[in-house]
Amino acid sequence: MTPNTNDTGTELLSRLKAGDEQAFTQIYNLYWEKLFFIAHKRLQSAEDAKEIVQNVFFALWQKRQHLEIQNLPFYLAAMTRYAIYRHLANEKRKAGLHRKFWGQKQDAGDFDLDNKQLLDLLMHFSESLPENYRIVFLHHKLMDEPLASVAEQLGVSPRTAERYVGKVMNIMRHRLQKLDSPLFFIFF
Image (tube, rainbow, N blue to C red; front, top):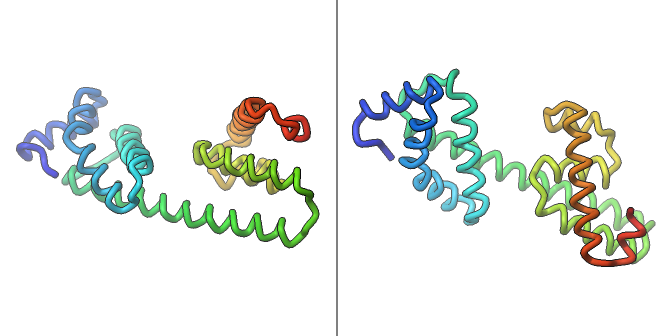
């Protein structure tokens, strides 16, 4: 996972630090396949691996001015590994939340079949949402946590969390309308 010469790598890093988009593109073209391979090998999911690689390069671009990189290939591989670890930890946490949520609701026995079907639909739809949207939806809308608390968990402002809620609700309305179901009218 090395460029043709160390001089080329050093030059690319200097240009990247200066904000040169062509240097960033060259770095991306040199390393994206190798990083994708690392992520895919560990996650066994092409979609998740693509997202990991995209996030690694996004972080590289965002932090470019403040980074002191000695060895770009090792640095990118380490960023990818840590992104994989975070992804796996998030998946484990989500699975725990899902079990906790469903366990509490099933023990309570306080909802009927229509509500359970609606909840199943909403949970299914939420799986395709971006990570932050899904967290806001699950915690704020389904588990009734205060929006300020959810925003703090995500590390975003309450206003940003409100925008997430608005976008999620529009997505959910649109998806439920497509079903042309009486459940749409119950929920909205």
